[in-house]
Structure formats: C-alpha cells, structure tokens
Length: 188
Image (cartoon, rainbow, N blue to C red; front, side, top):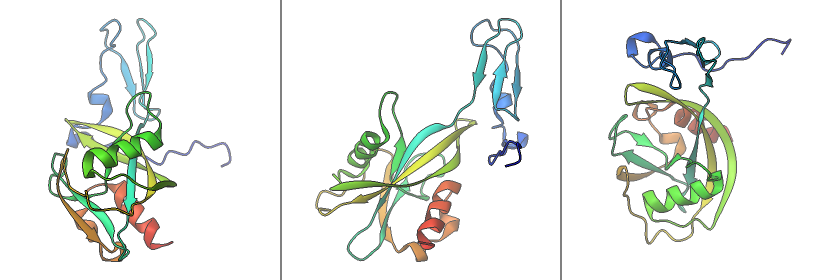
C-alpha cells in the first residue's frame, strides 16, 4: 500500500444533514466546543483532551435459502427505507458475539432456528438513521434452515419474499452493503 492510508468510506454530504461533523460539535465531558475531523472520523476537545473515534458499529446479516435456491428477503417495516427489500439481521448488542447475534436476530425477526451458520464475508455500510449516519460493518452468515414451518415476520419487518439472487432488482435495495452482498453471491 506504499504507506498511504486507505479510506474506502467517504464522509456523507453536508446537504443531507448527516455528516458526523454536524453532530459532534461539543465535548460530552466538559461541553466545550470541539472539532470533528472528517478525514480521521475523530472528535477532539482541546479544552479537556477528550478524544473520540467514530468507529463502525457491528451488525449481522443472514443469507437463508429455500430448497429452490431462492434467497429470503424481508420488507422493511421501519425507516430508513420502509417497504424496501433487505436481508434479515441487525445490530450486535454490547457484550454479544456475532454468532449469538445472528441466531438472536433470526429468531426475533423470523421465528426460525438455523441448523447451522457459517461466516461468508463482511461489507461496510452507511446506515442513515435519525438525522445522522451510522457506519456499520455487516458480517454476513450463510444460515442453513431445514424447517421453515415457523417462518413468520415480526419485529421491524412488514413482509417476506424469496427471490433468486440473479432476479433481485437493485432499485428495491436501499443499502449499499446488501447490494454488494448480492453482487458477491452472483459472482460465486
């Protein structure tokens, strides 16, 4: 890499109102105005020395296929992008490992219990929520399910749909990470 820092995520645009520098202006320790550096994704208070790095939040995503080779998609029931296609999954809770989070999310959202989960890959994402951006790293797991008899949707989902990966309409998928996951599946 020739000693150059690689930065694959760009800072969101100011006109969207989600640039982190718009939300990290004052020190949470002493309330003095500080500086957010969009290049290093860090807030620094020059008064008390508080230093905060805006790191990616950990999330999990499930790839669940039926016997026809169709991939299970959810329809989002909450913003951002209500009604759009997504893959099952969610944020990892503090103190929780990725595998436990994957099993929990599948149970909460779909009432399924996978027979086996296997790590596939990870993909960065920018999740626009509540007027800001949450940078995530989406850890993807292939989930083998033999019993779909309890399959339902709940939590933050308003519908389910099995779709062949090659038939997915990318215009219906709001998240860059999910589009990149589908591209990776298509290239397997």
